[in-house]
Image (cartoon, rainbow, N blue to C red; front, side, top):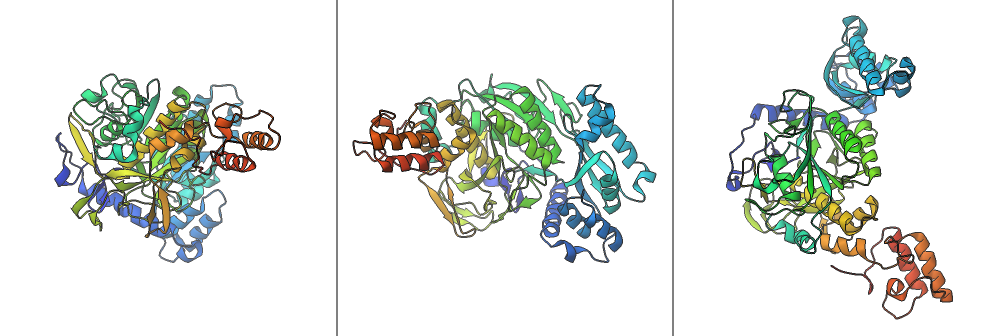
Length: 557
């Protein structure tokens, strides 16, 4: 999701008033309009009830549409979209047992999956197999039992009836979604305190990185590319090794600099000592064609870099959701869950369409933290949407938000590394997301025993909550210094393992009742009264289950 430009999501350019000192980038206005049109169509189709969308104007015909809706393997969102449009983009999820059972478990699993997909595509691309339907492959993915394709109603029915197919799920393409920003979030304080990412690695899934920039000298530890439209530097759908993540857009270079720039020729990022794993999924215009590419990137990270501290995805699908989209993007959600299980914090931008109740994927995935943007400083004459004159810490008018927006961070305007050297300035939730991802990595450095959930909880304990009248919600704005205080505080840590759990609350209660020496007063006296009381046990329990407590024994940095 990149930076927001005019009324559309950013495609690698910035408003003229803040154009970067590096070479400018030109994108296709026609391509932008085409993809934006798809977004509007999908939003309109997926928002309506299924029965009311089946009309005589459907190219599939009312009878076929009814069959699509009744087919249990076809996701309801796919059926709804097909009732509005002649073709939609889907993800075919292959049935594991059918794929492996056909091979008798005698051959390597990846080879089995490849041959199964070959057989499936051979069947579905044959006219006889489609019975008049349409099926056009978008992409197939290394390590995933899935195929992305454009289908009409007949193609969807043929795919759902195939013995190798488990579900026909919705899919979507999408796009890419510092000077004042780091002090506003107190990331400059955590950096000064020594939490610079030393010994850790972060992943940036984006348009790649310009590793020739002085600010990234020696910083890039690995590269890969997953692009079903054959946009990898080698002209293919995948590439690995040096040069695989070469940036041809500039968005990823800016995002990586926000997280990890060394401060040479551009502002220093939040984690100047962290290693960067650069993964390219965007083409030169800033688009990706399928969520399967993102899922493949996450799978590659899980298999090769399970110790990665944080993963930033400044990306957004054209489709948006008001509730968890896990059931719509099963592969994306599944790979995200694996990485989170490894201990990685996954962070994504919510998107830049000014939607006050919905966010895009990957931010709508349950194991991903969604981030919206605030202005990082007062500005006048802003004409990008309807903000006019803005002040720091005001939610940007273009930010998608709602129940799935977990945090706010500065995203307009953010200056960091630029393609070809120097710096670049962008506006967007794409620039807010890497600040949260960087803070999550800093928290892992501050307390390696803290879980992903505890790191997210500590970031949500910001002293600054911003109320948004448009969405009628309050959102915590990132304060990383406060988050470090929370994640490193010993308050309530009765057993000294650097984590506060329900069992610690029980130990504090026992100490309060019987003075059994189970919890030192410096770790259990929340109210500073000089003795351990039952109220301290309650405070410990509240902290254990994720509620904030400001107390005398809270440490600082």
